[in-house]
Length: 54
Image 1 (cartoon, rainbow, N blue to C red):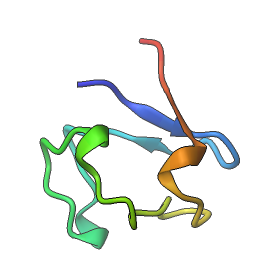
Image 2 (cartoon, helix red, strand yellow):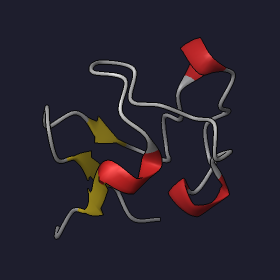
Image 3 (tube, helix red, strand yellow):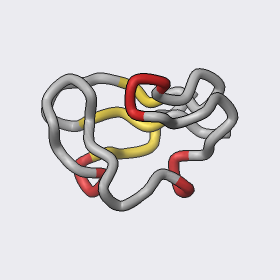
Image 4 (tube, rainbow, N blue to C red):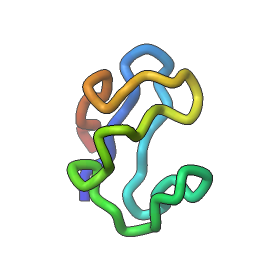
């Protein structure tokens, strides 16, 4: 599963970890995050993330 980085602040969503603070279980792909999900660091929406090349 691909990681996604927040363009404004650089925080990286790792699907292997998820986002437990917002109720996102480990193993949740970025594409499956709810539209209401926001960056836990700076608060922007999913549209402000881009895939990370690994």
